[in-house]
Length: 353
Image 1: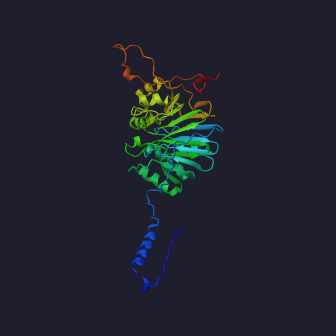
Image 2: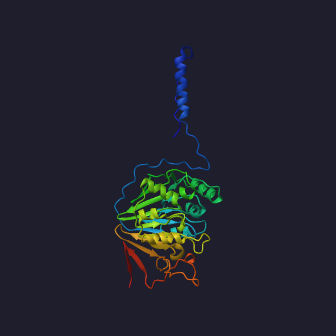
Image 3: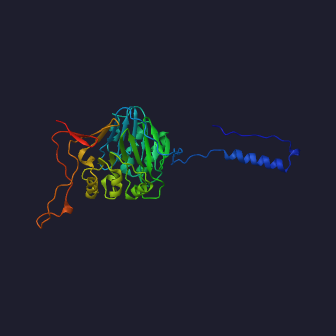
């Protein structure tokens, strides 16, 4: 909008001190209204909705949540009819764009980058190039990496509305309402500054944790914002730096899904995390073993559909250690091949005969 300028013409001989002061005030007021140019590296941030968490809209239609196998990284597509939301995009070459082509109708309504690590934002660069994106949600954290620089350049070129997520914000899109549970501010490590989102669809609740670790979990527990959920995206790829017993006791997931690359050098998922998840009764799936995992729900019941028909992750049974047997600390995570595909409806596992 053009800047409004006010011109006052007064005969010079009639100007007294009060009139001069008024004229100066008006000139200063007019100049203060001139907008400044945004930084070439940082997109303008739209003020966020800081209202209390929104009550979930009624469930209408089938919601599908795709935990996409992108190797060592996160990429989650939430698809409800013609509404699509993408949380993270894995690394630069995981094939996430090709996967989205089959599901995104027109524009991608919302993109969320939980934090600026390359295994979460690298793939989003290609997504921004391939799709029109309406809204982009960031946590406001920065990085010195080349991947981050390329990502922010793509964000600036997109022309989307850009938001910084903070606890209490709501991402409202189509028939979905995501509540932002974290961060409050950028006081933690890069992982602990991750955006954490909860989503309720009818009676089925989901929690998406990015790479949030136990410090972030403790912050959410203190504030009482941690929900009881049916499906948990396990924090930080199943690392033992996340998924504290207190956090899992409150979330109480029936299904836990970690996202990690097969044979990754970090040892994800860590055995302590698997033990903690089993202790709260969760059925555990991982993209390193099960490939892409799709959870579908009508708001009342839900199905878990892994690409690879393999039983949920367990720890092997062990007998008392003897000198000739390996110590329990050397145990490996195991799965067994299922004869028939299985899925979950609420708490009951159904085997298809």
